[in-house]
Length: 299
Image (cartoon, rainbow, N blue to C red; front, side):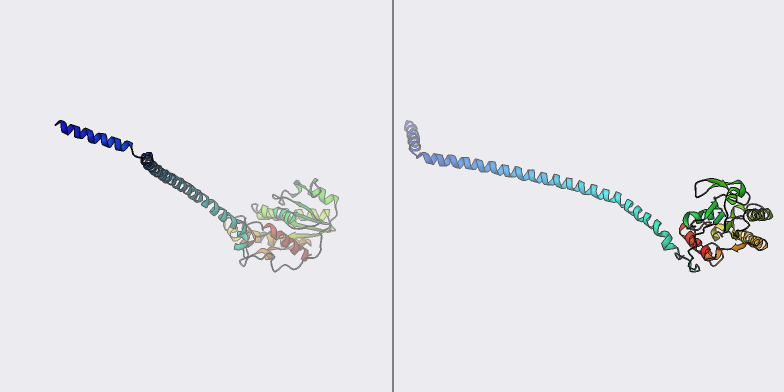
C-alpha cells in the first residue's frame, strides 16, 4: 500500500518537473490560442449582434418607408379630387364656345360704315345700356337705364357720358341731334296694351316737338328665347310681336323710321336664339358690337 502511494507521488513529481522544463513559448502559444478562441467567440458574438442590429434597423427602415409610402398614397388619394375638380372647372369657361353653334358674327350683317354716331342720341332700357357698354357707339349720347319705360322716361335722370346727371327734357333742350334712336317697350308689357301705345305715341310727339330736325328711329323690342317665353304669360314673344307691330304702325303714322333687329338674332322658330343669350332676354356682350355694326349699315 505504501509502495502504491510512493509510486503515485513519484509519478506526480516527475510530471511537475517535466512541465516546469517546457519552453515558455509553448505556454504562450497555448495562452494565445486560448485568447484567440475567446476573441473569435467574442467577434462571433459581435457579428451576431451587428447582424441582429442591422436586421432590426432594416426592419425599422422598411416600416418607416412603408409608413411614408402609405402617407404619400393617402396624400395622393386626397389630391385626386382637387385635380378632378380643376379639370371640371376648366370647361365652364370654354363651354359657350363648344356648345354654341352661333357664329362669331351673324352672316346677315354687312360691313358697317365709319359712322361715329356724332350728333346721335340713343334712348332706351337695358338693351340700349348693353349697346353703350359692349358696342361702339362712338360719339353718341346715351340716355338709358335698366328700368326705363315710356311711363317714367321724362321723370328719370340719367348720368351721361360727361358725368353729369340730367333728365331727358334737359338733354333734348340743350343739344341738337341729327338722329335719335328710341327702343322701349319690354318693361311695359305688364301694362294694358292700349295704355302702353297711348303713352308711347305721347313720348314720340314730345321728342319730335323738342327735336323737329332729327330723324327719329323707332326700334323694335328684342325677342326672348323660347324657354324664357314658355315660362311667362307676360314676357313672351307673342306679346312682344304684337307690341312691335303697333310700334311699326306708330312709326308709319308719325313719319318715323322703324328698325327691327330680331332677324339678326332669331332662331328658325322666330325666338331669340339660345346660342346668343344666357339669361333668355339679353344677348351676350360680344354680340352687341355686331348689333351696332348692323345699325351702322342700316343708316
